[in-house]
Amino acid sequence: MIITNPELKTLLTAYTAGTANPQINLADNTYNTATEADINKIRKIMKAYCSVFKFVPEKRDCDDYAIVAAAVRSTICPGAAFGVIWAAGISDGGNHAANIYIDDANRVRLFEPQNGEEITKTPTGNILIII
Figure 1 (cartoon, helix red, strand yellow):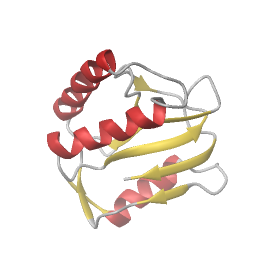
Figure 2: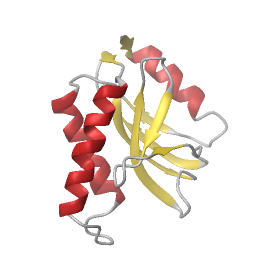
Figure 3: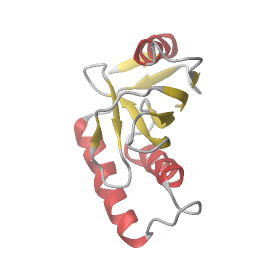
């Protein structure tokens, strides 16, 4: 399904409502929504990647994995509304980077690229989204 830049901006603005000054950067005029099959392929590739390239604090950590997953997306589902989110509140620690995407039901969803699990926590601040 196609989603326009203004439609995506509206979804992400609603998703981040109640937080101070979220930064939302969108690169394209139109996007495709991501299918569950596509997301599962990305999860599978990321699990394999993370099993080889282990977590190293401040060197190979959450932001690095999220960027790799976004690059994998460009091969699996080009043009998908899928990117990186940096935010407080989406993990047990402070700020964290993960992946954000829009599914076929036009829902904003997050997943942890280090283990492929869906993140159900809501961002609470310091939000930067790049898609």
